[in-house]
Length: 368
Image 1 (cartoon, rainbow, N blue to C red):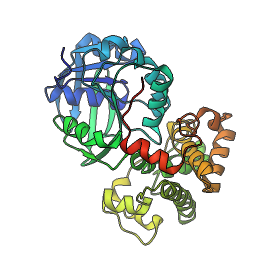
Image 2: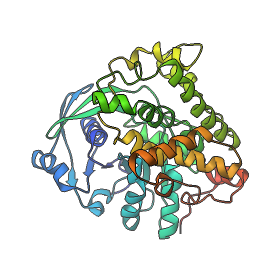
Image 3: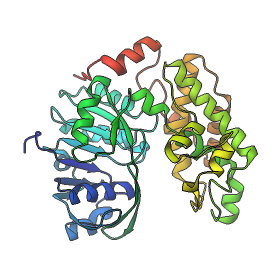
Image 4: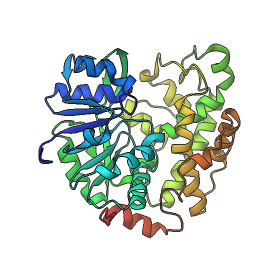
């Protein structure tokens, strides 16, 4: 099949992957669905597709359902990675031998440094093809698997910023994506998408600060509206200020968490606590039932660690973020700095801000 045809491979058959594969198929696009575990996709393979409910309804036939990565990406134009960010490096290593010239890889989302991590893997593997790597700031849907070969889309977000590496390819990527997903809009560059990662502020910090309540109630409380008190909000604001300061050191202006709440939900407040309490979109969102949750296992190594690592390299202190990384290590008995995205793993250690910005803005992704 020619890469000129708008076709998709969705990598990952979790809550997001199944919903996205079904959504694209219902809109009439050829879709291959990949999952490394055959058990997760056995019912989908048997049925030949996914029943989609919620914002869209109907049976979505898939062209291919497979645990063979070479089959999954062969001949497709756009490769949509829909997995936790912890899996990005693994998937980059998996697809590297089978990539074709002209393919576009989108991380949904990239968290912090996702595209840089994938780029570094491709450089290490010395792949001999030209591909574009891009990342979304957040995931398109609020969705859940609702049964065997069934997924429910609760909400489709209005606008999803996306940026490519290099940045001048972003418009090309967005124009291609919008034929199927009109919600995607161009962002300045991958530094902007990476450091606009609001989950880095809310998820690990709030989970750790509410650890006792989560363990004693198994998450039976409203995560945001009850879990964030005025005192907790002050700590979240400290984490947020550090994120914004590191981004500023890279020459990137990102919204504060309070500004983001206003733009995303029209939630007003004189401070972060008031803005959260005035956000009806948070009503009814329950806390995780355990502290062993992706809000820590993903968001600490893939969000907080890279922010702190960039901060250390650029001379921007991140004492509050460092505390939460340390607490997460204690709670889980892990070393999330060793596991996470550091400037060394992202291939930017020792680079000046000018060099980093030149790389993300204007240098072709040449990984030969």
